[in-house]
Image (tube, rainbow, N blue to C red; front, side, top):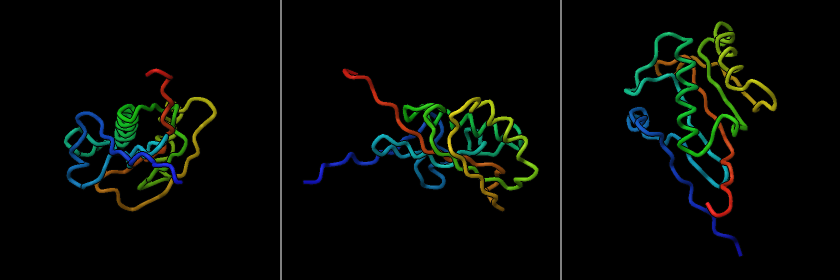
Length: 139
């Protein structure tokens, strides 16, 4: 007999619904013990991009942190990262400076960086998979 599985559940951070509603997708999906986070960008609450690239990258990580928290996770729970860059060669140094603060020591998550030519007005996007921590017994 096949064991029933929990139905995947959509997860949204507080006060961050503009882009999700505009484009019709979930911010993240919790399935089993994994949280699959949609691409996070350096957007303000109204969905507008932050024009300064360094600030856009920091804001994308800030938005990612809020998304992880909404799913019961933190940066420490990330196992897989995919980033999208509109100009990888010229953006790499800025992104690595932020990355080194978010992930200061091993074990680092695995990471795939992809150069793209369009991100709907943004220049950086980050999507992750995180393992949802187990809740202690009796919680």
